[in-house]
Length: 116
View 1 (cartoon, rainbow, N blue to C red):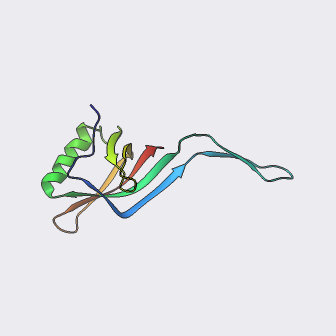
View 2 (view 1 turned 180 degrees about the vertical axis):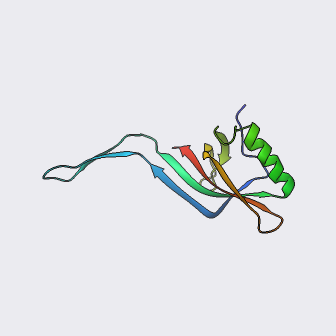
View 3 (view 1 turned 45 degrees about the vertical axis):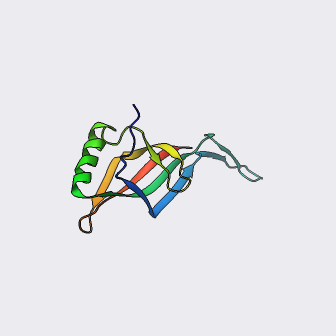
């Protein structure tokens, strides 16, 4: 069974950013424009995300999902891309998340990576 980002978690557009990387190989030429070619046909896309988790009960449930279902953030999971509304596979870069709360609502700042 594929892991899925829990339904109580919202990916916010605030602070959202994408950075596709085709790992372009560049060769400088003596008397001409440098040659370039991509090493990948599909980019690895790094995404800066802010996730709204909600109340403390949801935070504790997310911690358990993060630990058990995606093994500390190392495994891929399904999430809905907030830009194109398509379901994609992602994982947390380095298994790192940062919790914050300005009051009673919990947020996560993280970096996700997807292929394509």
